[in-house]
Structures are given as C-alpha cells and as structure tokens.
Amino acid sequence: MTNDNSPIAVEGVPFIATAGLLTLLCAVFHWWVVAFFLLVVTLFIVYFFRNPRRVIPNVENAVVAPADGVIIYAGRAVESHLQQEMEKISIFMSVFNVHVNRFPLVGKVLDRFYIHGKFLDVRDERATFENEQLGLIIEGARGAKVVCVQVAGLIARRIVCYLQPGDTLPMGDIYGLIRFGSRLDIYLPIGTDVRVDLGEKTVAGETILGILP
Image (tube, rainbow, N blue to C red):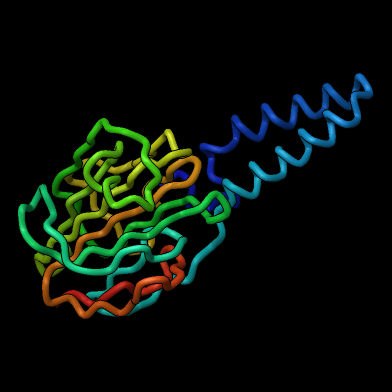
C-alpha cells in the first residue's frame, strides 16, 4: 500500500509541511516564542504520523491486531452486518499511539460499509453504534469471516481506508489510518482461540489477537 515503505504516513505530509512552514516564517520574523511553540507542534505531528516497520508473525490462521493501543473490550457481541454473535475485541488508540492500521489476516475484502455518525469518546460503548465508522467484511483463507471496523472518536474526524470489495491483502499490510485518536473494533467467529485480555497493549501487525477455528 501507499505507506508501506515510508517512515511517515503520506497523509501526514500536508500537516507537517504547513506546521514547518509556519515555524520557519515565525523564525524569520524573530517571533521566537511562537516559533518554538510551532516547532513543538511540528515535531508532534511528525511523531503522530510515524510509520515504524513491523515483524509480521508467520502463524497459520492467525489474526493480528489492526492497530496499536490498549484493549478496552474483549467478549461476545452481536455484529450488525453479519447479524450473528461473534468474539469482539476493541482497541483504543490515544493520540500517542501509531495510527497506521494494518490488515488483520490473510484474506479478501467481501464488503465495505460506511456509517455517518457522531463523534463520542470511543471509550464509551455507545460509540460502536452511534459514531462515524468504516468497516470491512473480510473472508479468510478457509472461509472464516472477520469484520474490522475503524471508529472515529471525540478528536478523530477523518477515517482513511485504501481498500474496496474484491481486494486481497496479506496479513500485516497497511490498509488505512484514522486522525487523531480513535479505536478499532474487530469481530472474530465464535470458536476463535482468543489470545489477548482486557487491558492488554497491542502492536499493529505483530500482536496475535486469536487463531481462527
């Protein structure tokens, strides 16, 4: 995908360039206090859009975390698009986490859906039903269906997803991001051997969430 070999997500370049230019202009006019503040802002934006390399595990039928963050929900829930009970794992991303999202398994995108909604704090469970979100229904190599949903939050106002129905991708490849802090919900089939617990930190593309049945 677009960001695979870039140390900075390309979506961040306009923000970095704007903040850097404003910093330079303030320095030219000797507005040192403002220039220093803008320099800090510029460095934070660079940090926010960082895109570190990841070592993808070679484990058959594994599902990896699509996002860096902390698990704020792990349990069963009804997934509305497949209309069935599934194992749900929610990962909260703060503004300090890497925000590049990675494909959770080897599979094919069967469908893509977008819901225009609110921007509640994503730690509120109502966000699952009421917030703006973009989801993918993915079919794994053995036919298991997984649903991965990017959920916008209180600060995040922009969901980016590169994929369309029919696209196939290996596990761990970059497929999108969310600006600036939000969450990922992933639904796994009942019978999945879930390998993570509530409160556990995840690393996108590396942390194994579960093994599909």
